[in-house]
Amino acid sequence: MHLTLLDWSVISVYLAALIGMSALIGKSQRGEVDYFLGGRRISSLVIALSIMATQCGSVSIISAPAFVALNEEGGLLWLQYELAVPLAMVVLMIFFIPLFYKLKITTVYEYLERRFNYPVRCIMSAFFQLSRGLATGVAIYAVSIVTAVCFGLPLWLTIILTGFISTIYTMMGGIKAVIYTDALQLIILWISVFICLGYGLFLMDDWQGITSILMQANLEAVDFHHHGFGDGRTFSFWPMVVGGLFLYISYYGCDQSQVQRVLCSPSIKESNRSLFINGVLRFPLVASYCALGVFMIVFLTNNPELRAALPVDHYDYLLPLFIVNYLPHGIIVLP
Image (cartoon, rainbow, N blue to C red; front, side, top):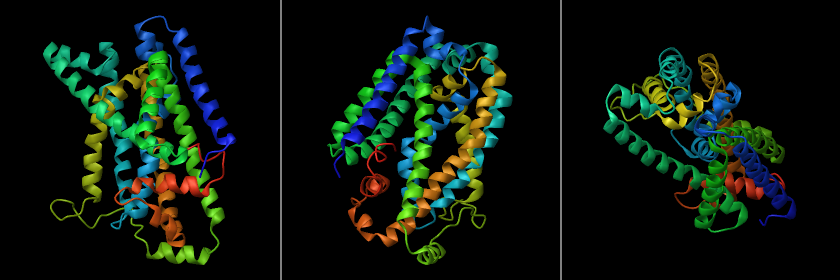
């Protein structure tokens, strides 16, 4: 499918708005606190949407539905991980955020310098740069898969373009531009999930067939039958909840990409509110991604040509191919 003038217009308006917003934000900045912490004046809701977007953004909307649709062990078991998020938020709100505000730090690595010494700060900062660089590469790759399929361009070229545009608006507007862009993109992605679901259901005719397919599919979402310790079961309840608790505490409380966003709030109360909102909204967001994956189980059964079009061992192309081949022009560029 080739993009039409309508598609290119939507893309152009979006990119122009993105860069224009970053430029305006950049002009209003007066110092280091503005650039790195948004002047500590960003609302808790926007920060919550931003930290949600860092873990449930373009990578998730591409990989989660494919995981649910194509994982024979039961892709919905991944939802058990999300049950650990509210628990982790409580720990952060009680212990981490008050400490960070008391120390008046800009980065989490300042705490390491005060607690230990300067070399420790440098070493951990270096590890952060390396890990975030790799993680950012994965995120750019996921976005580039969609753009490559939609635009009909080589994947390497869309990777370069995506990275270039992201670098431009980040440099111009600092953390405030990043947070507002994250929030905007998350809203668009969440709307896109329901567009894909709604339009896909509109294309379905055999509703009795849908029921029979879902009855045969593995839709187990909670596994209390296995303990996960050496029994070969990767997605059991207790390992995922306990492991997820420590994972999310370390991610939201020790990873600078998250701590910096939370510290953009004007107070401890507002920071805790952003974490609370994240803890409440993350599960329904991920659940909607998984619901799209359940729908794709049915759609793949009724449309075997879509499964045949998937590149071998590249199942992340499932949703981009569905979007390009079945959604109308003007909408295919939104996800």
